[in-house]
Image (cartoon, rainbow, N blue to C red; front, top):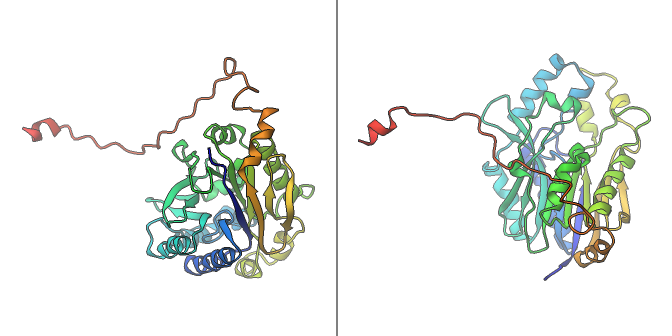
Length: 326
């Protein structure tokens, strides 16, 4: 059995707010940079293309409605021509890419918080929709379903992903672990509007460490930042936006090993790109002590059932179908 070794990169930065085309350009520039430094995998933040609905937290729902409209118009589908440039960049630079997008649904009231998994041939091998939008996010995003709760085999190993708060969902995490996940991408947004005593950067690290330690795998965390551009856009309606969206220790990006410890120096608040050497063989030995997927569990006592059927919203029935066949 092969356990690859490779270099991974993770990005902590802001999108070009509500501009999918320019944000894709920015993502491609990071892919090029990571490739030039020998990386084979790069992780991008939650809904990086092309922004997070901060207005849900600092405006009334009525005030935020026009911003929802802007987000919908600047959301994307996986088949949009502009997205093809991103897939081509992954292929050209031999890079596996996990990136968050606002995915436009068929209904104008439907946007999904989606993570794309793109292989080094430029193919979309996975598309995970966030299962449950968190708190104020319910004003913007539609919930995903179990059909996207999967682990994807790649040249560098089995990859799974969850977005932001769903990394606290024990059953979702176990579902990925049970499919042989060894590389977990956890992407986030900077959230300075959390309660005053809530250390967002530390909370992100704790979640990542818990998953890595329990599952004996590598977690790669990518978190966005809040740019002056984002605050300036919202300032006309929220004059004290700087006070609301500026707080230290609101973003954490980095790497966690199978022992639950941070690898190297993470990015806290600062923008940039960091790297780590990933050796999947290091996932084996820790399982001798605690393998919650095998000898360290009691499946005669516990039974987890996961509905992986896509949600069916409508079924068309033609009562004349048999007649028409005749």
